[in-house]
Picture (spheres, one colour):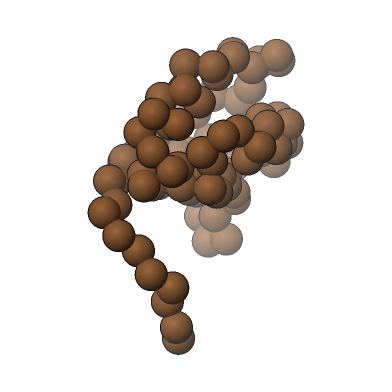
Length: 97
């Protein structure tokens, strides 16, 4: 299993426009083979921050997703910076609080 997680930054005044432009892509990605979860969301504390979380069954599924990605249909607000990492997970279990 792979997890891709991190953060990106856009102009705070453009954040909602940026996220709205990704809605169709998020819906499409969640329906792709091997996608277990896919979220791009506004951070509740930092006005220009966007949080990214993806969970994939395998490296091959993630690679297929990346190979099939199309450029956005409309110009999107510029990403001012990002810090995203890929984690290879060998096991997981439900977490009880």
